[in-house]
Amino acid sequence: MRVLIVAPNISIRMGGEAVLPYHYIRELKALGVDVHALTHARVRDEIQSGDISDCATFHFVEDTVVERMLNSIGKLMPSALRDSAINSAIGAVTLARLGRRARKLEREIKFDVIHQPTPVSPLFPSFLNNMQTPLVIGPMNGAMSYPPAFEKHYAEGSGGAVAVARAVSGMANRLAPGKRQAARILVANERTQRGLPNGIDPSKVSYLIENGVDLQLWSPTPQAKPDRPVFVFVGRLVRLKALDLLFEALVEVEPPARLVVIGDGPDRTKLEQLGQSLAGDRIEFLGFRPQSEIRDILAASTALVLPSMRECGGAVVLEAFACATPAIATDWGGPQDYITPQTGYLIAPDARASFVRGLRDAMNELARDPVRTQAMGAAARAHIEEKFSWQAKTAQMLEIYNAVISQRGDIGPSLTSYNAAC
Image (cartoon, rainbow, N blue to C red; front, side, top):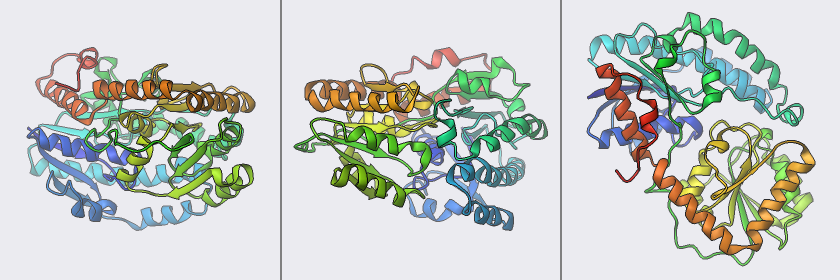
């Protein structure tokens, strides 16, 4: 089987949805698939020097003055507005060019399937229209909003841009009808399905969570547990992650706990100042760290805490689970798809005071009960092994490829029974 993966970014360094095509490429190669990948030249150096350079035949579209200009404008904007407006505009330009190049490649090379795993937003148009090869898009996860109680404070003015994007989505998807023409549309949940553009045949829609975990990398390690509870946050340091609420909750945890913050972003200086004023040396900022180091920190911690107010995916929750570490997260968006009462805590974002109390109470329970913490961690690891390994997810995707090639009927429900041990 020969497959063309089309994605604007294929990158571990960039994080987020850019890691999804990376894993599909690696695992499909391991399954004997002849993989071609089409992406933007901004990730060429990483690909050529990384461990997937021999996993596919790579094709690139080069940067343009339009993309560089939009990127320069975005640097002057608040992070939430930049993420919702400027990055979407850059993505549209890149995807339009990828679509043209994909049609050219299709004329030159015979593919059995074309797969566009990203963008994961259901609103974003696909420019892979008028393809002669069966097209699979997704899994997508999006149509997110902010919790009403927190939108005004954490949206940073992006609400208007999001509303405009949703308003023009219908027109954009009519002009670039790749999603309506696709052989298979994959969505992570009902929220995402509701966000799909009009005109998509419901019989072509199947459910599959977009995130997975590399169990060879993310695994429990024999780390000595610290003398006092340690909680960990991993992610971009931007307002919507709501770290200010986590800091407020931390200072009320007894016995006194530490918080390790991994990641970087435009709000780092502001957050360091806030953390120092609230909790002194109980909060440690580590900046970016390699995945192997993050794994070791997670494995030695009490729990991951992800208080984000807008988290479509939340792959870091799965990574913590793979390290046998429970998670505490906002009961909103992606973490809802992963966390169960046996593996962690979901905190309702109803109001600021109650949310802070919820974080505090969850951290207190784990800080005071190491036996409970260990049991939750073991359940989290078992949960990951059963449903979320990249090996399992890629085998599911291969089944989908075979289905669209043979034009079988809807196979969505049968996919949920796949076991990672197979």
